[in-house]
Structures are given as C-alpha cells and as structure tokens.
Length: 199
Image (tube, rainbow, N blue to C red; front, side, top):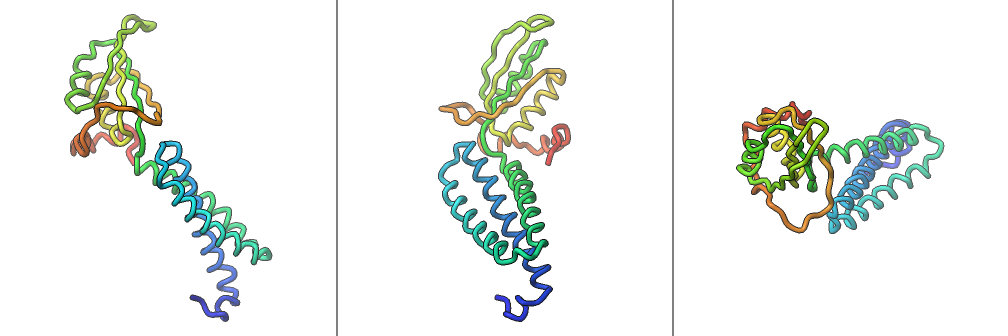
C-alpha cells in the first residue's frame, strides 16, 4: 500500500501513521460502545460479530503503537481516537433510537383528551387513579419505542402541557400495542422536535 521509502519518511511517521492509529482506535471504540449498548438492549445476535471486528481493529492499532513507542504523537492519536470513538458510538445509538421505554404521565386535570390522543395514535395505555400532594391525579402508563418518544411528548404538550412525566428504559416486553411503522412519525410532528432538543 505504501512504499518502504514513504513509510520511513518523517511525513508518514509523524502524520500519516498517527492519523491511521486515530481512525483505527476511533472505529474499534465506536464498535465497542455499540456492542455494549446492543447487549444492554438484548440485541444479542450482532454482538459477537461486532466484537470480532472490534478486536481485529484494536490489534492492528496496538501493534503499531508497540512498534512506535518512540513516537509521542501516536500515543496522542490513540487516546484521542478512544475519546472520539465513545462520542460517535453514543451519537450513532441515539440516531438508531433502539429499544423500548416506559412513560409515566401524571396529571391533575381530566386526562380524557390525552388518553384519546394516545389511543388514536395506536399507543397502548394503562390508566390508574391516584392521589398526589394536591389532590386526585390520573396516572397513565405507556410503553413506547424510543423513536416514538417525541410523538408522545408532542401529544402531552398539546393536551396537558403542565403534566409531569418520566421516561425509563426497559429491556423486554412480552406483548403490547404499538403504532405501525411510520404511523407515529407524522410530518407535522417534526416541527415539535426543538421542544425536546431534536438531534
């Protein structure tokens, strides 16, 4: 790939090699971050493949580090690649929006309009009568795909903007009611993304 003369040159040793080490380390840490996230989401079948590629890239990177212990730029490139790999792994996972989350919505007002809106958008719900510090409350539980969280938040903002809600990750569900693919991402909901810090 590279001539022996170019490999022996200062340009390769101080610029090209550190750049290659940076890219290799960033790639393998990105895969490692995704592997851990997939494992936590019970997406297990792709994990061994990611682990194989991750270790292969890591071996290539660390072998070059060991051959160039005299080059401090390689160490900096290795550490920087590690940091960027974590960053990109998290960003990729956020874009994929994998997994399921449970939303707990608590409102003091009559929640019939919010319940109707959720049902109209094919979200499965469970309602519980409760009592809060300021009187009776309605508790609405719904399990949604992560990609649909913004849709539910939009419905809350439209119907009960002062409602309290919390969101938690869950690993698995046995069965449930979910919108069909694409049904909950209506075009007019895209304008609401800034409310939740859209990416």
